[in-house]
Image (cartoon, rainbow, N blue to C red; front, top):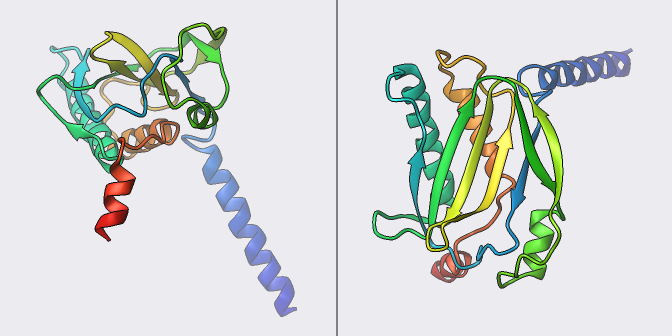
Length: 197
């Protein structure tokens, strides 16, 4: 009987966990695309560009929250914020309406990075795919400042569907979801920190 109660409790916990994953972020889409010419192992510094509407104070507040979380995440990965000729420019934008966007069918970014220490020419075929993103899509794009082109973009849907909504928890989760797909540390960062210990 005791084992049966334990089993019932375990099943209840699993059911609650399953239901909670279906709420909010459970049905969202996320992904990322990258440029074969990106010098990902050489980028060290970053700064921001945004496209927030200046007349919408709620939107501006959400953008400031996003900027904070994105900066924190990049700094955790060893990148340094810089006002002087940053290697990467970070653009981020929330699309509050449904969105049809173009992505690319590519090898997993982590796997491609291991096999490509140096940027490659754009000879590899980009296989475009169409994606439907539901309301509230966050798109983060990393641009190579020197080359003036996008080298990586990450996106997730189901973030905020109303510009007047303020939810730091949702925005934080969205940034984590996106940057979990960009697991690139600044060149030398891991070596520097392992030798310091």
